[in-house]
Structure formats: structure tokens, C-alpha cells
Length: 324
Ligand code: ACO
Image (tube, rainbow, N blue to C red):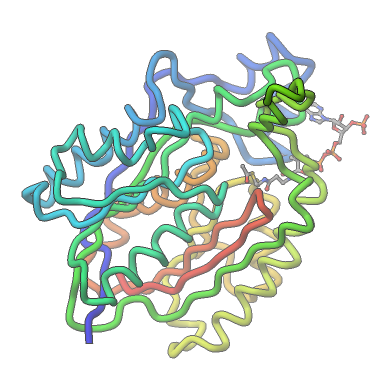
């Protein structure tokens, strides 16, 4: 049998920060509204870096920290809804940047669940026995798809990237998994509509800005995602008390408050950093994970058990229980 594990983590965010007070200068909003409704105080916004630049910084660190020869990397997955281009993929740019010329690479589009979906995919690739090492990165420059005149979305998001090195190992680290999508509710969160363009039609839908029915996404996260996490814990080969930390998508502190009650795990175990970064979509979980390792709460020696959960556009949602 072949198994996979997370053997290294890294993150990178653009230097420029924008506070709630800064935003209140250009929008009809306030620090009081944003922080009390979401927990967000700051976000990092790219001035001149593309999504691939952020992903490249993460990949460089993963290589350096693990002292890995890039030629040993078998695959690279970049989860993003804000690629530099649809072709080439962001992952192709990362591959070229680090010289991982033996890897096959692709981008994965699952909004804020992208990193969890990518990790689950990487686990299966390694479990197949065909591939031994791979990189999974969540990277976003959401700033470029925001309508900066729309206070209902502009205040919520930020840019950043985080990622992990995955390697083959000899015992199970991925203890339980649950992945879902519901295209019937896709209208609740949209961006990058390209519409039609042919000799017979003129595009009518060419609107790339992110649009969100915030209240509906809030209710979906609290109800559907919490229920799924409860079921995941029930079927996992561990007791609920054995979960050390919960690293959930960082959209809104009030969502985490409600989820903690529904799932029945003390709120202190739900880690958070939305205060500093806002919602960074596919990057939020790997940034949080990398920071948690930097703080020494997790040592990457297989002694801790974490529950990761992503949820967002698609709709998509997914959770994993992982030894790390
Ligand atoms: N500043 C001041 N007032 C505002 C702002 C703002 N930035 N934004 C909205 N308001 C106003 C609204 O206009 C409304 O005013 P009205 O009552 O006069 O009409 C009032 O505040 C309340 O608005 P609601 O939308 O009802 O506020 P709510 O409490 O639902 O909070 C929020 C909105 C923060 C967006 C919340 O619904 C939320 O967090 N939703 C989930 C988002 C999420 O999880 N996204 C994850 C996926 S993202 C992805 O996949 C890329």
C-alpha cells in the first residue's frame, strides 16, 4: 500500500496592506461594520504581482525548506479562480519557475474549496503508487476581479498564496474525506462570465467581477458544511476529542462561531487569521496552515490531527481529517 503525507508548508502574501479605515475612504463603509460582521481588519492587496508570482514564492520556499531537487517533483496543482490566464495554467508558470521539468501540472477551479479538493486529488495520485512527490498550492489575486465600488464584496477579500509539499509515506495520514458540489446553487457566487463570442453573436455577459449573495452563502456554510463535518467526524477512525485544530476557510468569524456550536467542538480549536488577510479564497487554508506551523503548534511529524474544511463558489464544499 502507498500513502501520502504533507511534508512541508509555505505561504506568501503581497506587502501592501489595506485596512478597513483605508476602505472607508473610498466606500460607504466603516471599520465597525466590517469587523463586527466579519472579523476582518486588514487585507493584503497586490500592486504589481500576478497570481503566478505569489505561487512561485510559495513553490520556491517549499523547495528550499525541504532541500528537494525540483526534478523529483511528479506533479504540481494550483487551485485558483484568479489565474494570470486560462492558458497557460498558473501551475505551468510555477513548473517553469522552479525547473520541475519532470512534473505534470494543472490548475484546479473550485473557488474557496480549491485547496481541499487539490489536497484530496494529490493524496489519490500518490496512493496510486505512480507518483511520489507533488506540490499543491492555493493562490489568488482576488483584488483583480473585485468591483471596488461595491461595498458588499470589496471589503471581504484579499490576495495571497499558500501551499504544501506532499510525499509518499508508509502509513495513513489522510483519515477521512468528504467532497461535494451543487451546481444548482451556482448563481450565489459568480465571476469571470465570458458570455458568447462568435461570428453569429456579440457577447452580452462579459462581466468579470465577483458577485455574491452573501446571506445565502452564509446560511449554506453554517447549515450544509457543518452537517457534512459532523458526518465526517462520525465516520472517521478517531474520536472527536482527538482533533487538535480545525482550519476552515477564512470567510467570516461569525460563520466559524456558529459552526463551532453546530459541530460541538470548542471554539478555541478553530484557528483564524481572517483579521489580517480577509477571505483569500483557495489560499486561505494553506496560509493558515503554514502560519500554524511557523507558530510551532504543528510540527509536521504526524503527531497532530487537523480538520480542514473549504466552502464557496460552485457551490463547492469539502473537508479532510489529516494527521500532520
Ligand atoms: N459596509 C456597510 N454596510 C454594508 C456593507 C459594508 N461593507 N455591506 C453591506 N452593507 C449593508 C447592506 O447594504 C445592508 O443594508 P440594508 O439593511 O440597508 O439593506 C446591511 O449592511 C446588511 O447587509 P447583509 O448582506 O444582510 O449583511 P450580513 O450580515 O449578511 O453580512 C456578509 C454580509 C458579511 C457578506 C455575510 O453575509 C457573509 O459573510 N456571507 C458569507 C460570505 C462567504 O462565506 N463567502 C465564502 C465564499 S467566497 C468564494 O467562494 C470566492
